[in-house]
Image 1 (cartoon, rainbow, N blue to C red):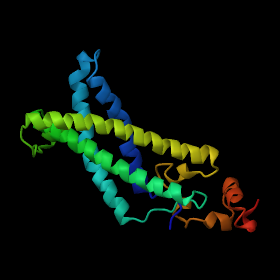
Image 2 (image 1 turned 90 degrees about the vertical axis):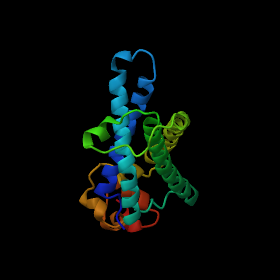
Image 3 (image 1 turned 45 degrees about the vertical axis):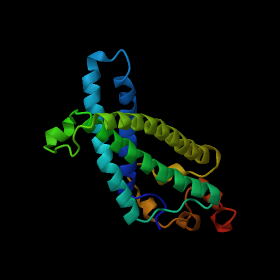
Image 4 (image 1 turned 60 degrees about the vertical axis):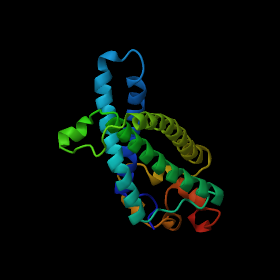
Length: 210
């Protein structure tokens, strides 16, 4: 079992994260006052990014299902492991609901999705004004839930990395996995590893002390 996520998993993660970081502020700006001059462009960008998320998230979920998940470090309690898995599943679900509701709100409201038009892909939903308004509410509500869930996820990673002595961030960063990440988890404790890793492994493997 590898010590960190594979390069495809990392790229899926960081590309989707970047798209969210970009599209959430765009979504706020395009519905706020003071952006009248660029509102149409913001809507076009927001819809295009939504399409990319709608494509990437299922692909990412499929890739995760097909490839083994690297184990969390032993220092993380079982309760927090379960919470981490639940948070990940929640993120997948919220991303899908947000993207699908945005698509249905746009198509159902009779609006174009310019990226799909440019690719020659037709909309698969006709106009349905009443449901479009409902999907608009769902889209906005889920966006708030998504931001809150991401905040919990980031806080947990920073807590373990900065204060818990467990560098869980290294499982997903950098975006391209190194040769070290291809080694089985725990190899560093027996082959030397880094100073921090040897210190963390010291209680269970005296030979790994510096």
